[in-house]
Image 1 (cartoon, rainbow, N blue to C red):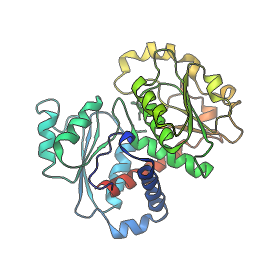
Image 2: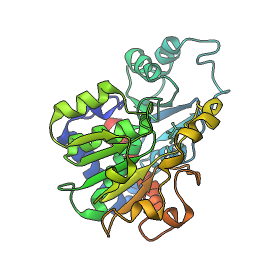
Image 3: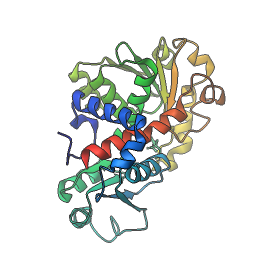
Image 4: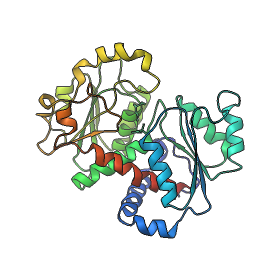
Length: 303
Ligand code: CP
Ligand code: NVA
């Protein structure tokens, strides 16, 4: 059911399909050597287009392709004509005749949609300004490992209501988790995505501007960088608006006693203190490692 599909946002995937991807990830984690031996993507190729920097997404996609027996080609911002000397449509039509899939990190979400519309091969969103579905899959995977279930889990998001938050909202809504979100005024998640999640009616979702209220009895506390890639010019202004949204031990004292702290990384101290980030509740490095297993699951099933 997943073969040849694009992975632009989790909106396009059912609860059962997300479940299947999480189960494949678990299997890959446990049997990585078997996957290496079987090489299910032998003869397949993935073109990786990155208009923004990346550590985790790039490394995990390249390693996953290698483990699955396929080939990946990394194209950074200055390596191809895309957007400078050639349209996205033409690039999509050319690459679709050569490769088995495209993984792309872009600014505007419509750019991955254009790639998907014209290329004829699966396109995987490696982060756009609106969504980060690969991150959400790793986050759900990490939560499930820690609590053994999604049932009754409350996720508290403290920070910016943009791409990573949007994807986690959809993931939580689809898998039945409760998500409470606190953002500064003016940085709320998109109304359209909020409406979509509420309409699903699986997981409860709530948006406010009050981190203290949101973190109360949370099982999972999550934040993200306050200044996303492409927002560098707004840095000073954003840091002012986000000054009361730092995750610190005062704030986390009202989360559940066995709460976990997550952050997609890269991290900066203004978002979370060292005490919490490197503390006993933090699972951030395990979360980063899980990107490998969940990305492998997406590549194996789609390509
Ligand atoms: N979390 C994440 O996507 O990290 P990178 O920007 O390093 O890929
Ligand atoms: N919100 C961040 C996520 C980085 C993985 C950004 O868009 O830069």
